[in-house]
Image 1 (cartoon, helix red, strand yellow):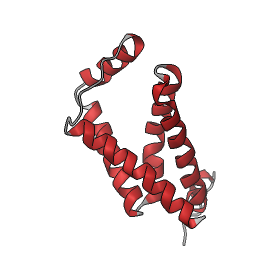
Image 2 (tube, helix red, strand yellow):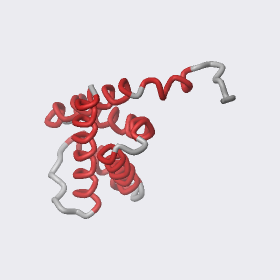
Image 3 (cartoon, helix red, strand yellow):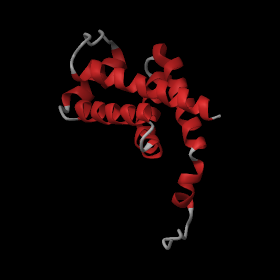
Image 4 (spheres, helix red, strand yellow):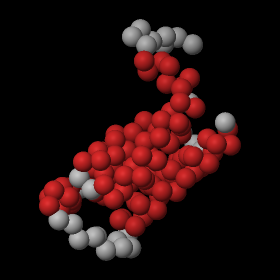
Length: 130
Protein backbone atom coordinates (compact mmCIF):
# COMPACT_ATOMS: atom_id res chain seq x y z
CA UNK A 1 0.00 0.00 0.00
CA UNK A 2 2.95 2.33 0.65
CA UNK A 3 4.13 2.15 -2.97
CA UNK A 4 0.61 2.87 -4.24
CA UNK A 5 0.43 5.80 -1.83
CA UNK A 6 3.68 7.29 -3.15
CA UNK A 7 2.53 6.87 -6.76
CA UNK A 8 -0.93 8.36 -6.18
CA UNK A 9 0.25 11.37 -4.16
CA UNK A 10 3.08 12.04 -6.63
CA UNK A 11 0.73 11.94 -9.63
CA UNK A 12 -1.72 14.22 -7.85
CA UNK A 13 1.10 16.55 -6.82
CA UNK A 14 2.54 16.76 -10.33
CA UNK A 15 -0.91 17.49 -11.74
CA UNK A 16 -1.41 20.40 -9.33
CA UNK A 17 2.12 21.74 -9.88
CA UNK A 18 1.68 21.66 -13.66
CA UNK A 19 -1.79 23.27 -13.55
CA UNK A 20 -0.63 26.01 -11.19
CA UNK A 21 2.52 26.89 -13.15
CA UNK A 22 0.64 27.01 -16.46
CA UNK A 23 -1.87 29.53 -15.08
CA UNK A 24 0.47 31.57 -12.87
CA UNK A 25 3.02 32.10 -15.65
CA UNK A 26 0.44 32.23 -18.48
CA UNK A 27 2.17 29.44 -20.40
CA UNK A 28 -0.99 28.51 -22.31
CA UNK A 29 -3.84 30.63 -23.62
CA UNK A 30 -7.12 30.52 -21.74
CA UNK A 31 -9.48 28.39 -23.83
CA UNK A 32 -12.52 30.05 -25.38
CA UNK A 33 -15.53 29.25 -23.22
CA UNK A 34 -19.25 29.76 -23.76
CA UNK A 35 -22.39 29.83 -21.65
CA UNK A 36 -22.23 29.04 -17.95
CA UNK A 37 -18.55 28.05 -18.17
CA UNK A 38 -17.69 31.51 -19.53
CA UNK A 39 -19.75 33.23 -16.83
CA UNK A 40 -18.08 31.16 -14.11
CA UNK A 41 -14.57 31.74 -15.49
CA UNK A 42 -15.15 35.47 -16.03
CA UNK A 43 -16.36 35.77 -12.45
CA UNK A 44 -13.37 34.14 -10.78
CA UNK A 45 -10.90 36.04 -12.96
CA UNK A 46 -12.72 39.37 -12.45
CA UNK A 47 -12.13 39.29 -8.69
CA UNK A 48 -8.40 39.63 -9.31
CA UNK A 49 -6.98 37.93 -6.23
CA UNK A 50 -8.84 34.62 -6.37
CA UNK A 51 -7.09 32.77 -9.21
CA UNK A 52 -3.52 33.62 -8.07
CA UNK A 53 -4.40 32.62 -4.49
CA UNK A 54 -6.01 29.39 -5.71
CA UNK A 55 -3.03 28.50 -7.88
CA UNK A 56 -0.54 29.27 -5.10
CA UNK A 57 -2.43 26.89 -2.81
CA UNK A 58 -2.46 24.28 -5.59
CA UNK A 59 1.27 24.76 -6.20
CA UNK A 60 2.07 24.53 -2.49
CA UNK A 61 -0.03 21.40 -2.01
CA UNK A 62 1.45 19.87 -5.17
CA UNK A 63 4.97 20.41 -3.85
CA UNK A 64 3.97 18.93 -0.48
CA UNK A 65 2.49 15.86 -2.19
CA UNK A 66 5.55 15.32 -4.39
CA UNK A 67 8.04 15.77 -1.54
CA UNK A 68 5.96 13.74 0.91
CA UNK A 69 6.09 16.49 3.55
CA UNK A 70 2.97 17.58 5.48
CA UNK A 71 0.82 15.33 3.29
CA UNK A 72 -2.11 15.18 5.76
CA UNK A 73 -2.21 19.00 5.84
CA UNK A 74 -2.01 19.22 2.05
CA UNK A 75 -4.85 16.70 1.78
CA UNK A 76 -7.09 18.91 3.92
CA UNK A 77 -6.09 22.14 2.17
CA UNK A 78 -6.69 20.77 -1.32
CA UNK A 79 -9.98 18.97 -0.54
CA UNK A 80 -12.32 21.97 -1.11
CA UNK A 81 -10.49 22.80 -4.33
CA UNK A 82 -10.94 19.21 -5.55
CA UNK A 83 -14.64 19.31 -4.63
CA UNK A 84 -15.02 22.48 -6.72
CA UNK A 85 -13.06 20.98 -9.63
CA UNK A 86 -15.33 17.93 -9.53
CA UNK A 87 -18.52 20.01 -9.28
CA UNK A 88 -17.43 22.25 -12.17
CA UNK A 89 -16.76 19.27 -14.42
CA UNK A 90 -19.84 17.35 -13.29
CA UNK A 91 -22.30 20.21 -13.80
CA UNK A 92 -20.74 22.77 -16.18
CA UNK A 93 -18.06 21.28 -18.45
CA UNK A 94 -17.87 17.49 -18.61
CA UNK A 95 -14.68 17.43 -20.68
CA UNK A 96 -12.43 17.24 -17.61
CA UNK A 97 -14.57 14.81 -15.62
CA UNK A 98 -12.11 11.85 -15.76
CA UNK A 99 -9.34 13.98 -14.24
CA UNK A 100 -11.74 15.34 -11.63
CA UNK A 101 -12.79 11.80 -10.69
CA UNK A 102 -9.13 10.81 -10.40
CA UNK A 103 -8.48 13.77 -8.08
CA UNK A 104 -11.44 12.88 -5.85
CA UNK A 105 -10.41 9.22 -5.68
CA UNK A 106 -6.74 10.07 -5.13
CA UNK A 107 -7.48 12.51 -2.31
CA UNK A 108 -9.80 10.00 -0.62
CA UNK A 109 -7.08 7.35 -0.96
CA UNK A 110 -4.44 9.63 0.56
CA UNK A 111 -6.78 10.70 3.37
CA UNK A 112 -7.61 7.05 4.09
CA UNK A 113 -3.90 6.18 4.20
CA UNK A 114 -3.35 8.93 6.80
CA UNK A 115 -6.66 8.30 8.62
CA UNK A 116 -5.00 7.87 12.01
CA UNK A 117 -3.69 11.45 11.79
CA UNK A 118 -7.23 12.80 11.43
CA UNK A 119 -8.67 10.85 14.37
CA UNK A 120 -8.46 13.77 16.82
CA UNK A 121 -10.24 16.10 14.39
CA UNK A 122 -13.40 14.02 14.62
CA UNK A 123 -13.61 13.63 18.39
CA UNK A 124 -16.21 15.72 20.18
CA UNK A 125 -13.96 15.86 23.23
CA UNK A 126 -10.36 15.77 21.90
CA UNK A 127 -7.52 14.64 24.13
CA UNK A 128 -5.26 17.69 24.43
CA UNK A 129 -2.80 16.20 26.92
CA UNK A 130 0.12 14.15 25.76
